[in-house]
Length: 225
Length: 225
Image 1 (cartoon, chains in turn brown, purple):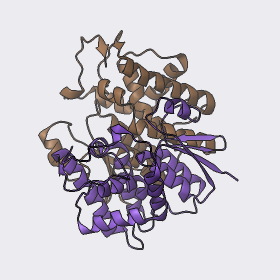
Image 2: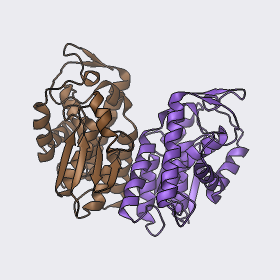
Image 3: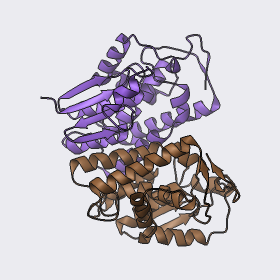
Image 4: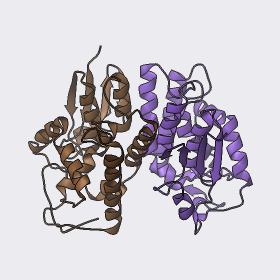
Protein backbone atom coordinates (compact mmCIF):
# COMPACT_ATOMS: atom_id res chain seq x y z
CA UNK A 1 0.00 0.00 0.00
CA UNK A 2 1.25 3.46 -0.85
CA UNK A 3 1.64 6.03 1.86
CA UNK A 4 -0.80 8.88 2.01
CA UNK A 5 0.49 12.39 1.72
CA UNK A 6 -1.52 15.46 2.58
CA UNK A 7 -0.63 18.88 1.22
CA UNK A 8 -1.78 21.63 3.55
CA UNK A 9 -1.42 25.36 4.14
CA UNK A 10 -0.30 27.15 7.32
CA UNK A 11 -1.74 25.43 10.37
CA UNK A 12 -2.43 28.75 11.98
CA UNK A 13 -4.75 29.93 9.23
CA UNK A 14 -5.82 27.21 6.83
CA UNK A 15 -9.23 26.02 7.94
CA UNK A 16 -9.88 23.83 4.92
CA UNK A 17 -6.51 22.18 5.46
CA UNK A 18 -7.47 21.33 9.02
CA UNK A 19 -10.58 19.54 7.78
CA UNK A 20 -8.73 17.38 5.28
CA UNK A 21 -5.91 16.69 7.72
CA UNK A 22 -8.35 15.55 10.41
CA UNK A 23 -9.77 13.05 7.93
CA UNK A 24 -6.35 11.59 7.19
CA UNK A 25 -5.58 11.41 10.92
CA UNK A 26 -8.90 9.65 11.46
CA UNK A 27 -8.03 6.83 9.05
CA UNK A 28 -5.29 5.66 11.43
CA UNK A 29 -3.15 4.96 8.35
CA UNK A 30 0.44 6.17 8.05
CA UNK A 31 0.76 9.47 6.20
CA UNK A 32 3.17 12.31 5.64
CA UNK A 33 2.39 15.97 5.31
CA UNK A 34 3.73 18.77 3.19
CA UNK A 35 3.05 22.30 4.35
CA UNK A 36 3.05 25.08 1.76
CA UNK A 37 3.10 28.68 2.98
CA UNK A 38 -0.13 30.31 1.80
CA UNK A 39 -0.07 33.50 -0.20
CA UNK A 40 3.58 33.26 -1.25
CA UNK A 41 4.96 32.99 -4.80
CA UNK A 42 6.37 29.55 -4.03
CA UNK A 43 2.91 28.32 -2.98
CA UNK A 44 1.66 28.66 -6.54
CA UNK A 45 4.80 27.12 -7.98
CA UNK A 46 4.51 24.14 -5.67
CA UNK A 47 0.78 23.49 -5.55
CA UNK A 48 0.43 22.91 -9.31
CA UNK A 49 2.70 19.90 -8.92
CA UNK A 50 0.15 18.23 -6.67
CA UNK A 51 -3.32 19.62 -7.16
CA UNK A 52 -5.31 19.91 -10.40
CA UNK A 53 -7.49 22.56 -8.73
CA UNK A 54 -4.39 24.35 -7.33
CA UNK A 55 -5.73 24.35 -3.81
CA UNK A 56 -4.99 23.01 -0.38
CA UNK A 57 -5.75 20.60 1.03
CA UNK A 58 -4.92 17.96 -1.52
CA UNK A 59 -4.50 14.33 -0.58
CA UNK A 60 -2.16 12.10 -2.55
CA UNK A 61 -2.59 8.35 -2.43
CA UNK A 62 0.17 7.17 -4.74
CA UNK A 63 -0.76 8.62 -8.13
CA UNK A 64 -4.27 9.46 -7.03
CA UNK A 65 -4.98 13.08 -6.14
CA UNK A 66 -8.02 14.12 -4.13
CA UNK A 67 -8.73 17.81 -3.69
CA UNK A 68 -11.43 19.67 -1.76
CA UNK A 69 -11.74 18.85 1.93
CA UNK A 70 -15.20 17.29 1.64
CA UNK A 71 -13.92 14.93 -1.06
CA UNK A 72 -10.90 14.09 1.10
CA UNK A 73 -13.19 13.22 3.99
CA UNK A 74 -15.30 10.93 1.78
CA UNK A 75 -12.22 9.36 0.24
CA UNK A 76 -10.68 8.68 3.65
CA UNK A 77 -13.97 7.14 4.80
CA UNK A 78 -13.67 4.75 1.93
CA UNK A 79 -10.04 3.91 2.77
CA UNK A 80 -10.86 3.22 6.42
CA UNK A 81 -14.48 2.05 6.55
CA UNK A 82 -13.96 0.47 9.98
CA UNK A 83 -13.66 3.93 11.54
CA UNK A 84 -16.68 6.06 12.49
CA UNK A 85 -17.55 8.66 9.83
CA UNK A 86 -21.33 8.80 9.54
CA UNK A 87 -24.15 7.77 11.88
CA UNK A 88 -25.99 4.56 10.92
CA UNK A 89 -29.52 5.68 11.68
CA UNK A 90 -31.21 7.10 8.56
CA UNK A 91 -32.60 10.26 10.13
CA UNK A 92 -29.25 10.98 11.79
CA UNK A 93 -27.41 10.25 8.54
CA UNK A 94 -29.75 12.61 6.67
CA UNK A 95 -29.11 15.33 9.22
CA UNK A 96 -25.36 14.78 9.22
CA UNK A 97 -25.08 14.95 5.44
CA UNK A 98 -27.26 18.07 5.32
CA UNK A 99 -25.30 20.10 7.84
CA UNK A 100 -21.97 18.83 6.50
CA UNK A 101 -22.86 20.18 3.08
CA UNK A 102 -24.45 23.33 4.44
CA UNK A 103 -21.04 24.10 5.94
CA UNK A 104 -19.23 23.11 2.75
CA UNK A 105 -21.11 25.58 0.58
CA UNK A 106 -22.30 28.15 3.09
CA UNK A 107 -21.50 30.23 6.15
CA UNK A 108 -19.86 32.79 3.92
CA UNK A 109 -20.00 35.55 6.54
CA UNK A 110 -18.02 33.48 9.00
CA UNK A 111 -15.60 32.47 6.30
CA UNK A 112 -15.08 36.05 5.08
CA UNK A 113 -15.05 37.98 8.32
CA UNK A 114 -13.73 35.52 10.91
CA UNK A 115 -10.61 34.00 9.37
CA UNK A 116 -9.26 31.04 11.29
CA UNK A 117 -6.30 32.14 13.38
CA UNK A 118 -5.04 29.76 16.02
CA UNK A 119 -2.61 32.15 17.71
CA UNK A 120 -4.56 35.26 18.59
CA UNK A 121 -7.47 36.00 20.88
CA UNK A 122 -10.09 38.72 20.82
CA UNK A 123 -12.97 39.50 23.08
CA UNK A 124 -15.89 41.85 23.46
CA UNK A 125 -16.28 42.24 19.70
CA UNK A 126 -19.54 43.54 18.31
CA UNK A 127 -20.86 41.63 15.31
CA UNK A 128 -22.70 42.62 12.14
CA UNK A 129 -26.24 41.30 11.78
CA UNK A 130 -25.26 39.04 8.90
CA UNK A 131 -22.39 37.52 10.85
CA UNK A 132 -24.53 37.13 13.94
CA UNK A 133 -27.07 35.25 11.83
CA UNK A 134 -24.42 32.77 10.66
CA UNK A 135 -23.21 32.31 14.23
CA UNK A 136 -26.75 31.77 15.51
CA UNK A 137 -27.28 29.17 12.82
CA UNK A 138 -24.13 27.30 13.87
CA UNK A 139 -25.19 27.42 17.49
CA UNK A 140 -28.62 26.02 16.59
CA UNK A 141 -27.11 23.23 14.51
CA UNK A 142 -24.70 22.17 17.23
CA UNK A 143 -27.30 22.34 19.98
CA UNK A 144 -29.80 20.33 17.95
CA UNK A 145 -27.23 17.69 17.09
CA UNK A 146 -25.94 17.34 20.63
CA UNK A 147 -29.48 17.03 21.97
CA UNK A 148 -30.97 14.78 19.31
CA UNK A 149 -28.08 12.66 18.10
CA UNK A 150 -25.08 13.20 20.37
CA UNK A 151 -25.94 11.23 23.50
CA UNK A 152 -23.28 8.57 23.08
CA UNK A 153 -20.27 10.86 23.04
CA UNK A 154 -19.04 14.44 23.17
CA UNK A 155 -19.49 15.22 19.51
CA UNK A 156 -22.29 16.08 17.09
CA UNK A 157 -23.24 12.47 16.40
CA UNK A 158 -21.71 10.82 19.47
CA UNK A 159 -18.10 9.98 18.68
CA UNK A 160 -15.92 12.24 16.54
CA UNK A 161 -17.10 11.91 12.93
CA UNK A 162 -17.04 13.53 9.48
CA UNK A 163 -19.38 16.32 10.54
CA UNK A 164 -17.08 17.34 13.38
CA UNK A 165 -14.19 17.58 10.92
CA UNK A 166 -16.28 19.99 8.88
CA UNK A 167 -17.20 22.17 11.87
CA UNK A 168 -13.90 22.03 13.79
CA UNK A 169 -12.53 25.23 12.19
CA UNK A 170 -15.75 27.02 13.11
CA UNK A 171 -15.34 25.93 16.72
CA UNK A 172 -11.79 27.30 16.79
CA UNK A 173 -13.00 30.59 15.32
CA UNK A 174 -15.63 31.02 17.99
CA UNK A 175 -12.89 30.45 20.56
CA UNK A 176 -10.44 32.82 18.82
CA UNK A 177 -12.90 35.70 18.53
CA UNK A 178 -14.38 35.17 21.99
CA UNK A 179 -17.92 34.62 20.74
CA UNK A 180 -20.43 33.84 23.44
CA UNK A 181 -22.65 30.84 22.79
CA UNK A 182 -25.06 28.76 24.85
CA UNK A 183 -23.81 26.12 27.28
CA UNK A 184 -24.30 23.14 24.96
CA UNK A 185 -22.44 24.85 22.14
CA UNK A 186 -19.71 26.06 24.50
CA UNK A 187 -19.20 22.50 25.78
CA UNK A 188 -19.03 21.27 22.19
CA UNK A 189 -16.30 23.79 21.38
CA UNK A 190 -14.32 22.51 24.37
CA UNK A 191 -14.74 18.93 23.11
CA UNK A 192 -13.40 19.93 19.71
CA UNK A 193 -10.43 21.82 21.15
CA UNK A 194 -9.51 18.92 23.40
CA UNK A 195 -9.75 16.28 20.68
CA UNK A 196 -6.20 14.84 20.45
CA UNK A 197 -5.77 15.50 16.73
CA UNK A 198 -7.13 19.03 16.96
CA UNK A 199 -4.82 19.82 19.91
CA UNK A 200 -1.85 18.39 18.04
CA UNK A 201 -2.63 20.67 15.08
CA UNK A 202 -3.10 23.61 17.45
CA UNK A 203 0.29 23.11 19.11
CA UNK A 204 2.06 23.22 15.77
CA UNK A 205 0.05 26.23 14.69
CA UNK A 206 1.23 28.08 17.78
CA UNK A 207 4.83 27.62 16.72
CA UNK A 208 4.42 29.06 13.24
CA UNK A 209 6.00 32.47 12.72
CA UNK A 210 4.67 33.40 9.29
CA UNK A 211 1.85 35.92 9.06
CA UNK A 212 -0.70 35.67 6.24
CA UNK A 213 -1.87 39.26 5.89
CA UNK A 214 -5.30 38.57 4.42
CA UNK A 215 -6.18 36.27 7.29
CA UNK A 216 -4.75 38.41 10.05
CA UNK A 217 -7.14 40.85 11.68
CA UNK A 218 -5.82 43.79 13.62
CA UNK A 219 -5.51 43.13 17.36
CA UNK A 220 -7.31 46.41 18.16
CA UNK A 221 -10.54 45.79 16.29
CA UNK A 222 -13.80 46.07 18.18
CA UNK A 223 -16.15 44.94 15.45
CA UNK A 224 -16.47 41.98 13.10
CA UNK A 225 -18.42 41.72 9.83
CA UNK B 1 -47.35 4.95 -2.45
CA UNK B 2 -45.25 8.06 -2.07
CA UNK B 3 -41.83 7.18 -0.79
CA UNK B 4 -39.93 10.39 -1.36
CA UNK B 5 -41.04 13.98 -1.46
CA UNK B 6 -38.85 16.55 -3.21
CA UNK B 7 -39.44 20.27 -2.92
CA UNK B 8 -38.08 22.21 -5.87
CA UNK B 9 -38.07 25.77 -7.22
CA UNK B 10 -38.84 26.94 -10.75
CA UNK B 11 -37.63 24.38 -13.27
CA UNK B 12 -36.67 27.12 -15.63
CA UNK B 13 -34.14 28.62 -13.23
CA UNK B 14 -33.38 26.54 -10.17
CA UNK B 15 -30.13 24.74 -10.86
CA UNK B 16 -29.72 23.34 -7.34
CA UNK B 17 -33.27 22.00 -7.51
CA UNK B 18 -32.43 20.15 -10.70
CA UNK B 19 -29.51 18.41 -8.96
CA UNK B 20 -31.58 17.20 -6.02
CA UNK B 21 -34.50 16.22 -8.25
CA UNK B 22 -32.25 14.11 -10.49
CA UNK B 23 -31.04 12.25 -7.41
CA UNK B 24 -34.58 11.58 -6.20
CA UNK B 25 -35.60 10.30 -9.66
CA UNK B 26 -32.44 8.16 -9.85
CA UNK B 27 -33.48 6.13 -6.79
CA UNK B 28 -36.31 4.59 -8.80
CA UNK B 29 -38.64 5.15 -5.83
CA UNK B 30 -41.97 6.93 -6.13
CA UNK B 31 -41.32 10.64 -5.96
CA UNK B 32 -43.90 13.23 -5.05
CA UNK B 33 -42.88 16.67 -6.23
CA UNK B 34 -43.75 20.02 -4.67
CA UNK B 35 -43.11 23.09 -6.83
CA UNK B 36 -42.55 26.46 -5.25
CA UNK B 37 -42.17 29.64 -7.29
CA UNK B 38 -39.03 31.41 -6.08
CA UNK B 39 -38.59 35.17 -5.67
CA UNK B 40 -42.19 35.73 -4.61
CA UNK B 41 -43.53 37.39 -1.47
CA UNK B 42 -44.49 34.01 -0.01
CA UNK B 43 -41.84 31.56 -1.18
CA UNK B 44 -39.83 31.70 2.05
CA UNK B 45 -42.88 30.86 4.12
CA UNK B 46 -43.85 28.07 1.77
CA UNK B 47 -40.37 26.53 1.96
CA UNK B 48 -40.30 26.96 5.74
CA UNK B 49 -43.09 24.38 6.00
CA UNK B 50 -40.60 21.80 4.82
CA UNK B 51 -37.15 22.87 6.00
CA UNK B 52 -35.52 25.12 8.58
CA UNK B 53 -32.95 26.34 6.04
CA UNK B 54 -35.52 27.89 3.72
CA UNK B 55 -33.64 26.86 0.62
CA UNK B 56 -34.61 24.46 -2.13
CA UNK B 57 -34.19 21.63 -2.88
CA UNK B 58 -35.44 19.72 0.14
CA UNK B 59 -35.98 15.98 0.30
CA UNK B 60 -38.35 14.35 2.76
CA UNK B 61 -38.23 10.65 3.45
CA UNK B 62 -40.22 9.40 6.42
CA UNK B 63 -38.73 11.11 9.47
CA UNK B 64 -35.70 12.37 7.53
CA UNK B 65 -35.39 15.88 6.09
CA UNK B 66 -32.41 16.56 3.85
CA UNK B 67 -31.42 19.93 2.48
CA UNK B 68 -28.54 20.92 0.20
CA UNK B 69 -28.34 19.13 -3.14
CA UNK B 70 -25.04 17.36 -2.42
CA UNK B 71 -26.52 15.92 0.77
CA UNK B 72 -29.63 14.86 -1.13
CA UNK B 73 -27.49 13.05 -3.68
CA UNK B 74 -25.56 11.20 -0.94
CA UNK B 75 -28.73 10.38 0.95
CA UNK B 76 -30.42 9.00 -2.17
CA UNK B 77 -27.33 6.87 -2.82
CA UNK B 78 -27.62 5.57 0.73
CA UNK B 79 -31.25 4.48 0.31
CA UNK B 80 -30.89 3.11 -3.24
CA UNK B 81 -27.43 1.53 -3.19
CA UNK B 82 -28.32 -0.81 -6.06
CA UNK B 83 -28.29 2.12 -8.49
CA UNK B 84 -25.09 3.58 -9.99
CA UNK B 85 -23.90 6.67 -8.10
CA UNK B 86 -20.13 6.46 -7.82
CA UNK B 87 -17.53 4.54 -9.78
CA UNK B 88 -16.15 1.55 -7.87
CA UNK B 89 -12.56 1.89 -9.03
CA UNK B 90 -10.76 3.85 -6.31
CA UNK B 91 -8.93 6.18 -8.70
CA UNK B 92 -12.13 7.03 -10.55
CA UNK B 93 -13.90 7.44 -7.21
CA UNK B 94 -11.27 9.91 -6.02
CA UNK B 95 -11.66 11.95 -9.17
CA UNK B 96 -15.46 11.81 -9.03
CA UNK B 97 -15.58 12.98 -5.41
CA UNK B 98 -13.08 15.77 -6.06
CA UNK B 99 -14.87 17.26 -9.04
CA UNK B 100 -18.27 16.77 -7.40
CA UNK B 101 -17.18 18.87 -4.44
CA UNK B 102 -15.26 21.34 -6.56
CA UNK B 103 -18.60 22.11 -8.22
CA UNK B 104 -20.45 22.18 -4.90
CA UNK B 105 -18.26 24.90 -3.43
CA UNK B 106 -16.92 26.61 -6.53
CA UNK B 107 -17.63 27.92 -10.03
CA UNK B 108 -18.92 31.12 -8.50
CA UNK B 109 -18.47 33.16 -11.69
CA UNK B 110 -20.69 30.82 -13.66
CA UNK B 111 -23.21 30.72 -10.87
CA UNK B 112 -23.33 34.52 -10.72
CA UNK B 113 -23.08 35.54 -14.34
CA UNK B 114 -24.59 32.58 -16.20
CA UNK B 115 -27.82 31.86 -14.38
CA UNK B 116 -29.50 28.63 -15.43
CA UNK B 117 -32.34 29.44 -17.78
CA UNK B 118 -33.53 26.41 -19.71
CA UNK B 119 -35.77 28.54 -21.93
CA UNK B 120 -33.19 31.14 -22.96
CA UNK B 121 -30.90 31.09 -25.96
CA UNK B 122 -27.94 33.34 -26.65
CA UNK B 123 -24.96 33.11 -28.95
CA UNK B 124 -21.66 34.82 -29.70
CA UNK B 125 -21.34 36.31 -26.24
CA UNK B 126 -18.02 37.79 -25.19
CA UNK B 127 -16.89 36.41 -21.84
CA UNK B 128 -14.96 37.99 -19.01
CA UNK B 129 -11.60 36.42 -18.24
CA UNK B 130 -12.77 35.13 -14.88
CA UNK B 131 -15.79 33.48 -16.44
CA UNK B 132 -13.74 32.06 -19.31
CA UNK B 133 -11.34 30.54 -16.78
CA UNK B 134 -14.17 28.66 -15.09
CA UNK B 135 -15.66 27.52 -18.39
CA UNK B 136 -12.25 26.21 -19.41
CA UNK B 137 -11.97 24.41 -16.08
CA UNK B 138 -15.35 22.70 -16.61
CA UNK B 139 -14.31 21.78 -20.14
CA UNK B 140 -11.06 20.28 -18.83
CA UNK B 141 -12.86 18.28 -16.16
CA UNK B 142 -15.42 16.89 -18.58
CA UNK B 143 -12.81 16.04 -21.19
CA UNK B 144 -10.58 14.30 -18.66
CA UNK B 145 -13.49 12.33 -17.27
CA UNK B 146 -14.78 11.24 -20.65
CA UNK B 147 -11.31 10.23 -21.82
CA UNK B 148 -10.08 8.53 -18.67
CA UNK B 149 -13.17 7.20 -16.94
CA UNK B 150 -16.08 7.46 -19.34
CA UNK B 151 -15.84 4.14 -21.20
CA UNK B 152 -19.03 2.13 -21.03
CA UNK B 153 -21.38 5.07 -21.33
CA UNK B 154 -21.94 8.63 -22.47
CA UNK B 155 -21.45 10.28 -19.12
CA UNK B 156 -18.53 11.39 -16.95
CA UNK B 157 -18.00 7.99 -15.37
CA UNK B 158 -19.78 5.81 -17.92
CA UNK B 159 -23.44 5.58 -17.01
CA UNK B 160 -25.27 8.54 -15.50
CA UNK B 161 -24.00 9.07 -11.94
CA UNK B 162 -23.74 11.52 -9.04
CA UNK B 163 -21.06 13.61 -10.79
CA UNK B 164 -23.40 14.14 -13.77
CA UNK B 165 -26.17 15.31 -11.46
CA UNK B 166 -23.80 17.93 -10.09
CA UNK B 167 -22.64 19.15 -13.52
CA UNK B 168 -25.97 18.89 -15.39
CA UNK B 169 -26.95 22.54 -14.71
CA UNK B 170 -23.55 23.66 -16.03
CA UNK B 171 -24.11 21.71 -19.22
CA UNK B 172 -27.51 23.35 -19.54
CA UNK B 173 -25.92 26.79 -19.12
CA UNK B 174 -23.34 26.08 -21.84
CA UNK B 175 -26.24 25.26 -24.14
CA UNK B 176 -28.29 28.32 -23.13
CA UNK B 177 -25.47 30.82 -23.57
CA UNK B 178 -24.09 29.18 -26.72
CA UNK B 179 -20.64 28.59 -25.24
CA UNK B 180 -18.20 26.96 -27.66
CA UNK B 181 -16.42 23.93 -26.25
CA UNK B 182 -14.15 21.24 -27.61
CA UNK B 183 -15.75 18.25 -29.28
CA UNK B 184 -15.67 15.89 -26.31
CA UNK B 185 -17.28 18.48 -24.02
CA UNK B 186 -19.85 19.41 -26.68
CA UNK B 187 -20.87 15.78 -27.03
CA UNK B 188 -21.12 15.51 -23.26
CA UNK B 189 -23.42 18.55 -23.11
CA UNK B 190 -25.65 16.85 -25.68
CA UNK B 191 -25.70 13.60 -23.69
CA UNK B 192 -26.84 15.55 -20.64
CA UNK B 193 -29.52 17.45 -22.55
CA UNK B 194 -30.82 14.20 -24.11
CA UNK B 195 -30.89 12.28 -20.86
CA UNK B 196 -34.62 11.51 -20.42
CA UNK B 197 -35.16 12.94 -16.91
CA UNK B 198 -33.32 16.14 -17.91
CA UNK B 199 -35.26 16.47 -21.15
CA UNK B 200 -38.42 16.08 -19.09
CA UNK B 201 -37.29 18.76 -16.62
CA UNK B 202 -36.50 21.17 -19.47
CA UNK B 203 -39.90 20.55 -21.06
CA UNK B 204 -41.59 21.44 -17.79
CA UNK B 205 -39.35 24.51 -17.44
CA UNK B 206 -40.35 25.71 -20.91
CA UNK B 207 -43.99 25.67 -19.89
CA UNK B 208 -43.54 27.79 -16.79
CA UNK B 209 -44.88 31.31 -17.07
CA UNK B 210 -43.26 32.89 -13.99
CA UNK B 211 -40.24 35.05 -14.74
CA UNK B 212 -37.44 35.83 -12.31
CA UNK B 213 -35.72 39.02 -13.40
CA UNK B 214 -32.63 38.29 -11.30
CA UNK B 215 -32.05 35.15 -13.37
CA UNK B 216 -32.80 36.69 -16.77
CA UNK B 217 -30.01 38.44 -18.60
CA UNK B 218 -30.96 40.83 -21.37
CA UNK B 219 -31.93 39.22 -24.64
CA UNK B 220 -29.66 41.71 -26.42
CA UNK B 221 -26.66 40.96 -24.20
CA UNK B 222 -23.31 40.66 -25.94
CA UNK B 223 -21.12 40.24 -22.88
CA UNK B 224 -21.16 37.87 -19.91
CA UNK B 225 -19.22 38.25 -16.70
